[in-house]
Image (cartoon, rainbow, N blue to C red; front, side, top):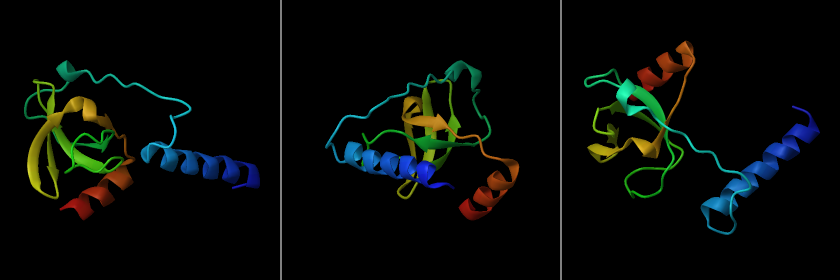
Length: 108
């Protein structure tokens, strides 16, 4: 990694910390729409990143294994057990097959 790219990454990490602490507004925001109708009941578990801080039991930016339902909620297993959360709290994570295998092995 060259120096310029490293500095841009460093600045982004510093900004992220300031945003999480409420010291400043983010310089950019993204909105993701999740098509709940594409997810069926009993669908296979998928990996997703938590993008909310509304619930004390969930950790923002953590990778969770979730199951979608037709109700707009997802089933999540966290440190405190299984719970239902709004699907909007998560962004699906597309993992490479070898990464998916390693993460699944760690999770079991």
